[in-house]
Length: 183
Image: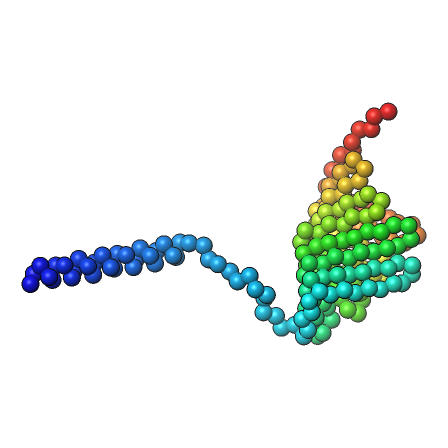
């Protein structure tokens, strides 16, 4: 009888140690997060968006994998954004992981892994890039890197005024490197 009681006690003890070990191992493991779409209170959800507009000789086309329209806020939140702009004599494109389009003003902001490329060989990389339509102003207040024809320019902000006379300013702590050209 004592032998049976000892056997049961040993079995229960091993079972408790095994369960406790499994709980400790699971609590130290990584936590899995959902890869599905985030729950949103958007008024409208749209997949594969394409907008196009032309004014003052400039044609722009916006594409996004997803758009969430918030009518009360007057903005549309975009995922996987690409903007193509054709203007007199040149074209440029902007891509980024996400962005906002403000309905009334048509102002635009693109964020995360932002890359601007132009047909004249310029490449700009940053994390946030904004467009203010009324001012024809492209700007950022975060670090920016510009590549063109062997030159690399690093700055902490950028301000570009578009128009007849284009004005570009790289601000903050600026560092520029120029490749040597052989004669």
